[in-house]
Figure 1: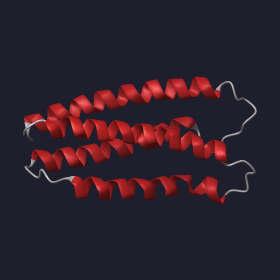
Figure 2 (figure 1 turned 60 degrees about the horizontal axis):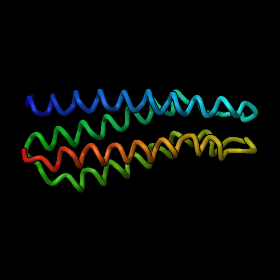
Figure 3 (figure 1 turned 120 degrees about the horizontal axis):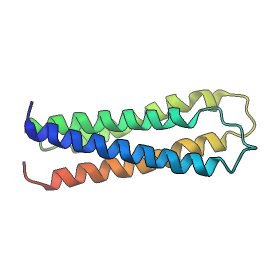
Length: 132
């Protein structure tokens, strides 16, 4: 494999792990002040989902880019659509449940979703601006 690919990938994994731990810590701290709310999906599962999906998207785009395919916009858009579908599937138990208040679980999922999306776009933009 390409050394540049491995370097970018390792850098991204370290950053992604650090952001995951920081966001999970902040999110857990904030939720500790809302003991009366019962959540269907554990917070750690939400962050594992985001970490894995973001890592997979970045890895595939990084791999394609390192192979010389610089036009990755369509690939990114396709993966973004796939992430949205996976997000709905992940939240399907909450959506189909008989719970009265589903908003806390949905907010717990989508706030990190958009933060990870921002991080993913930022990371891809950084390495796409550099010449191969």
